[in-house]
Length: 412
Image (cartoon, rainbow, N blue to C red; front, side, top):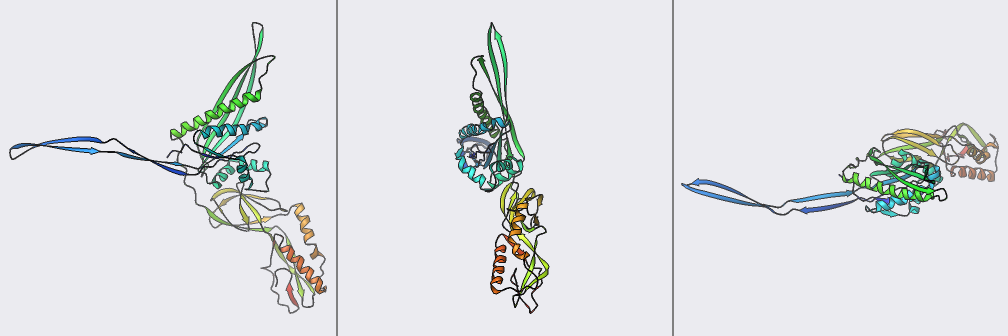
């Protein structure tokens, strides 16, 4: 099945720019009815001594039905020619957009696309988001998130300007040979496998005297425009030739469970007696962070603890929470898998943790508190539990001592 001639763009402006493009799938059916064709078959035989001739005339009319499908595609435009050309990537985006539009492409605003990319990780800086999207695996993951069947990656790969001085009959001139190279490739959106690729090269020779110098920026813009035309022409040729096969069947998603805990982070098990007497148990209570952000291949997919739905197989898993060091691993996702992520406090996070638990350090075993002091203590414990942490009391011994009224954490 051929890729239809229509892609629907979603453009995003970053530096260096990454442009995301998406298209809605449609199905078009065309029925072609051929002209009637008539054939006559003659048969002669003897019957009762007489020659009998039979003629059978048959009229046929052929019908052909063609079904074409428009697949979703994601497009990424980036620069690898050097930082000096970062500001030209937006121009390449515009030129490519204009050329693909001639093939039936609809374009939405860059602002909308930028907001969509930023929403994947609202806390990420622009350059960090761009770096993630530049990674091939992240590009595939983003395309899958957008529901794209294909990826079209366009790269500004190089620009050269070679000058040669010519002295003819006493007149000196400078010939500048400008060459621009742009590469594109189409990947299967499900597997990331390369389906087709091409590199286009455009050149322009500019002759100038020693006193007149052509603006290189103008020449480069002209070359970008020419290269975009060649990219569109090359893409159209491959579409017409059936070089772009139907997308691979998407793998079924699997659900995994992620649990979180804070590495080596505990608090004392504090109990209050019937006469407001403080008892500090020898057991310790584990603390787990809540509302942890989960990223798969650079894309935020949910939060932990809890279940997330992902594609099976190898992926980059990253778990983050403010006040903790990022946790990163390459994981082979399997159906029903359960992962426990132990996060470590950062220096800043540890300082805040000490401040929030300082009220426990001043308690002394056997001390008697007033009713007001007990209320303050219980309020601080409740505030700690509501600040994004879970205090695990399931392994704490049950309150059986008649002199113990209740526990500060867990409400025994």
